[in-house]
Amino acid sequence: MADDEIADVIVTNGGSNHNNHASKKQKIQSLITSSEIRSEFAHHDPGTARINNGSFGSCPGSIIEAQRRYQLEFLKQPDRFFYTELQPRVLRSRKMIKELINADDVSEVSIVDNVTTAVAIVLRHVSWEFCEGRFEKGDVVVILDCAFDAVKKSIEAYVKRAGGEVVVVEMKFPVVSGEEIVERFRKGIRMGKEGGRRIRLAIIDHVTSMPCVVVPVKEMVRVCREEGVEYVFVDAAHAIGSVEVDVRDIGADFYVSNLHKWLFCPPSVALFYCRKSRVSDGLHHPVVSSEYGNGLAIESSWIGTRDYSSQLVVPEVLEFVNRFEGGIDGIRKRNHDAVVEMAGMLAEAWGTSLGCPADMCPSMAMVGVPSILGILSDNHAQKLRAHLRNEFGVEVPLYYHRLKDGEVGVRDRNGLITTYARISHQVYNTVDDYLKFRDAVNQLVQNKFTCEMLS
Image 1: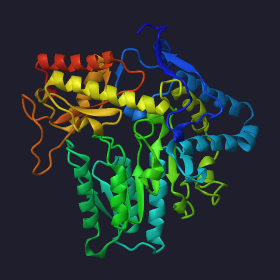
Image 2: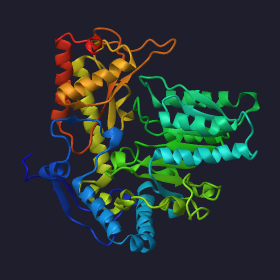
Image 3: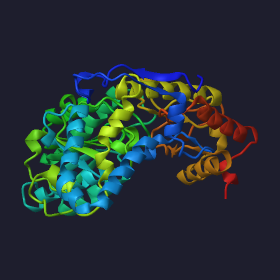
């Protein structure tokens, strides 16, 4: 496509009804070209094939400029900014997020720094339930084995110290089907209830991080309701902007998602949804300020003198995504289709396979790395990742899959596939990024490279 050709066209400022953030009375004709996309992300390292949007996201230049304007406005007159302008602007962002996720009421939506902060809020509340005698020693928290490390550490810091126990549900990888995940999760819940114990909290990933797969979250929430789980928390760090999010339909008590991963916000900002029936149940921000006791949303919107600009650019971000055909829904679908296509191309070129069915990929996909490279440990995988970055200009995470007892694993033409690459696709990516990765791996294979060669 030539620079002056239209890359995407949008005729209205919205997708589905609950994703329409513009005035219904005003329909805006707008477009974005390929050259404009390149301009928005011109600050990216031009020498790097950046196919790792999943880790830190990407912020367009126009949003960086908007953030800078808020920062300068604060520095120009901080008293006026904090006392008269900050709260209305945070509320404006919360209202837009409410529509984006289809929440019932804006009081259910708080803005926090990141998913880790929201996890701390919920787990600290659970620890108080133990310490104050409402939960009993030995009551259980259930998580998936692929839960983010910060979540596992937070459980250790808050729940286990307070007397709770943890049941870890194994999610087999590569993934065969969503039904298999649900059935394993149900068995884990029932194991946690053995001996008369009660499940006080279940933490479910909507999109697992490493390995990456879209989890059948709605069905797993339903299992929790059927089995009498007290609280259901959905860790959806990678969800918003990458998969469809409808918190009413999902039905969890708590749902949290980073806005800086797939929704183009600058770091760090996350939405924290708390179902209306749970709002008054004593949740508090871990940083106590003068707003303590005024509700989680207000507590979260003021935690002392800091930079709140990443929370304020939500209107500008939604304006940006609505420059694309179909808005965020259109971006999400095109990213999914593109990453599945590129993953298939890589797997075919290397004689490997994907880590899950295509319909369980978000805007990321797991692709087997040729076994001939001899990746025999996580340390090998991390060294190879650095080698790809430093020698070939390819930035991509590598996941070393350690076989558990009884697992057979997946083989390519040379042996057992031990490692998978997690590739991402965002609007700034081109086919050349993935061809660069393909060719780098092919060159290593042709040169009979093995990870043992890396010091």
